[in-house]
Amino acid sequence: MNYFEALILGIIQGLTEFLPVSSSGHLEIAKAILGDQSLPSESLTVTVVLHFATALSTLVVFRNEVFQIIKGLFQFKWNEELQFSLKIILSMVPAVIAGLFFEKEFEQFFGGKILLVGFMLIITALLLLFADKAKDTSKDVTFFNAMVVGISQALAILPGISRSGATISSAVLLGIDKTKAARFSFLMVVPLIFGKIGKDVLAGSISFEGHKVGVLIVGFIAAFISGLFACKWMIAIVKKSKLSYFALYCFIVGVIAIGVTLINN
Image 1 (cartoon, rainbow, N blue to C red):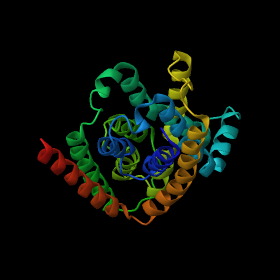
Image 2: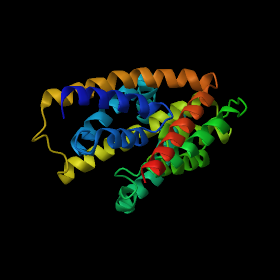
Image 3: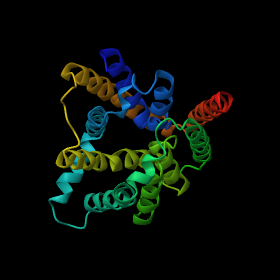
Image 4: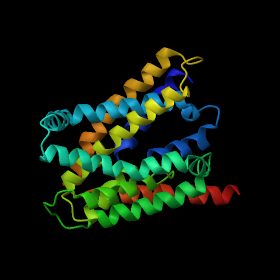
């Protein structure tokens, strides 16, 4: 991996982690275009570094909310902050189960399966279109909503299904306020990312040997900065109900991916 590839990969990760266009799907498409050996997306260490960067960008954007949640937790009362934290934990359960017990099964969907990515992008487009047409409400996230949105997050492991698109769309279709849906969607993934990093560190899966530190830093900075931009931008987009633009984008990319795959086969 060189500096240019690290920069491009970091920007892709930072933008697509928050924008509803599927980061995994775009990385799979990029891998097919550039070749398996020229794109460092298969490196677990690089992937973890980039995800860590976007997790940090989320914490920066929502630093006030995170501080209030932590402050509320130490009050040891059944307050709004404690309830919100429990909803976040509940939303993580489906993804944790999928990651622990079906990791190998999900891995089979990766590795250049562009046809699958294309169909999943079209599904993402439909979800975004339906969510964009949903009526505005002021409803908060309930414990039941948290579980349903958590299931959407688990299904978004599939390449081409946008995590933010699936979780925000699910929340909006459940009648949750759009801004609150986006906020919950972005915060619910942070513990999972840090948990995955901790799991990989303890398992010894992460190794910096053979990696140029400077290259990793470039990727990290690119993902962090683009993540800050994308996170704030996505919140504004959801408020204004502009998800249909991303639905059109996902549909076009999905059709192209399917068409190119069928032509080459």
